[in-house]
Amino acid sequence: MSERLVVGTVLKPQGIRGELKVKPYTDAPEDFKAFKNLFLDGEKRRVLSVRVGDGMVFLGLSGVPDRNAAELLRGKNLELDRDEAPEPEEGRYYIVDLLGLSIVTAEGEVLGILTDVKQGASDIYTLEKDGREILFPAVKGVVTEVDLENKRLVVDKKRFLEVAVL
Image (cartoon, rainbow, N blue to C red; front, side, top):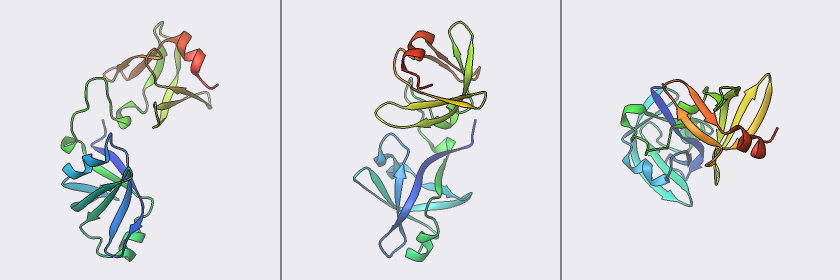
């Protein structure tokens, strides 16, 4: 498992004092208020301030004193040490832990490898097999089991075929 979790992406500078506008990848933007340190390009940065509004996070970090410094961080990912992250609730998983899982049917047929997760009203999973991408919603009835230990995600084949975009 990855030692760090991507928790957001810097969208742009906010104001002239080095604050960053961040798109959060957490369940709630308020989760950032609990973070003490984040990593940016592998460098540990202390969280100085956090504001939340309109589903975005406005973040002050050590080493980002002004708008010019903040501008250089546009598009960069913010990471959190896994041991500082809260344990996900039952039935919830960190995306980084799902990527690379084999997607199999209950009968053991391998459908492909999970390569991407897009967040929305329901998560949209992308599996790849033989150079083709197949998208499907990760909704109840389609995904029947997540087995991180054996690196597999089990789907109901009938429901999968009904909702998959081939």
